[in-house]
Image 1 (cartoon, rainbow, N blue to C red):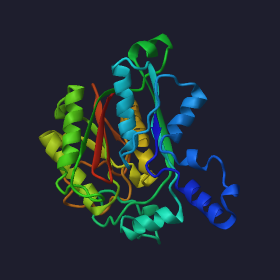
Image 2 (cartoon, rainbow, N blue to C red):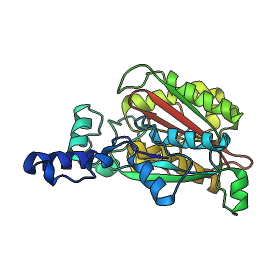
Image 3 (cartoon, helix red, strand yellow):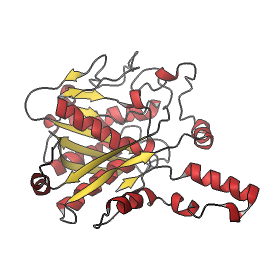
Length: 310
């Protein structure tokens, strides 16, 4: 179960150029299979001989978080013992960059690219496009014990919702995102007071970061004051469909090592962001049981949250 948000754009544009210049006889016979949204999941299934099923949920930048959620459901329902789940994205192409630039979604800090991704900063002005992939191996507890697997964390719950607001802007008060967080906590059987860490979606857009801060405050209430919030896109850029999986891994490793990663490029902080953002250096997490949220939100109003526990 592996997904991408912007499917095969480079393959499509290259194939179209070949068609335009040389005709269809010179096109690759793999042009269409490479464009299919399910192609990544299918290739992994073929390589590893998967038998249960293969899925490719497509929900913009929430895609791989939804994939992990669906993988966990497959295991809970007894449809699989072990699932490969994650996301990948390679969208850096003039067509994609031009489209995002026309939307005014990208940062214009071209003179300082290393400081362009600025989640929660007062002067943030858009996201920095990145590429990458993240894969998790999910399995039932009995299957993990039988093969002597090293268990890094447990997925306790997931929540999903949709804003029903606008195609490229979140609901300003974060109501939809708050529903996803609340549903994830309910499925996990946890309360806000059990959460010690959040890997925030935090893309560095003015509207998105503020909406997420409001969603966290609304869903966690006063307990939000004790939560260490990290925005790892400050270091990776926005990996689109791959971001949820990569950030779920970051949240899991934060619990495993009991260290919340820092957010860089945060200064000056937006005074409207009422969160305890980790800055400067990794922050030790408290002793005792640990649980964390990993948030992903996408164009179209897609919201997805995972609850993971050490």
